[in-house]
Image (cartoon, rainbow, N blue to C red):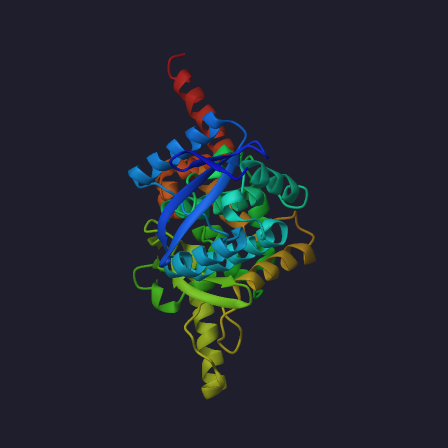
Length: 373
């Protein structure tokens, strides 16, 4: 016997013992679109049809789609992210998406489950750090949120996933004696200006690479931190500082003031000697012909300098941490240190340098208690 209509939208096949439900989506891309599913029990068929009709009435119906996870991520990048994010962010996202495509890119988006995402995260944590895996999770969750907003998904399966733990990075820095030794060895070297910008101003690598002479005010002994240079693959990018708070004005203490004056004079002499061959781009940290040094290579120069001189291992960013340590030694307030570092809030500074400020608080509380002895 052929299928027999049981009620509107539901038919029964007494040979296969199945209930057939027809879901009518209406006109999709100029054509009538219907989908049929089978159920073993009549009540399940009725429940499914009722839920479908309710979604249609409420306007939250999701049209079936064969778009894959890879296709969606690339649509999200090309239509949203590329127009709203920095080039460095776009570059980083593209790298993450390449990882996802290799592992799960062919998965149909509407069939993607929390289990699929959890499995992917588990696999990449065998190769990458927990913090990097967290970036993968955050990207996927954000992109799937947009799929929900665009009516491609009814809900975001990423919210059912247990995300990777964020591991707090260990802060490495030099103490006062180690910094004195570093400064002594750096005197007269090409790395000197890089090292002093890190120690005495606490600049980020991009801020060191992006600092230009027109932002150095010798008359008032001030430096304006307005620009930064970073890399996206092999391309160097010049842009403004990362946040409003990162744009700041810092006082030039004697060591960095003299170092900058000396560097400026040296560059002026070289400029006069080379004439039109000098590629003047106004950067403080540059090659002898005036070309700016790539941010990544500035880090390499510093690391090689540390290794070459047999010093305790330290990264270029470790100079910024050392600056924060000096500020703590000098008993600067958390607020002032935060402003000098260009952090968005003092809590950011406190979160990064918890250990140092915990020690400072201990000393302060001891001093307070002794006042009552």
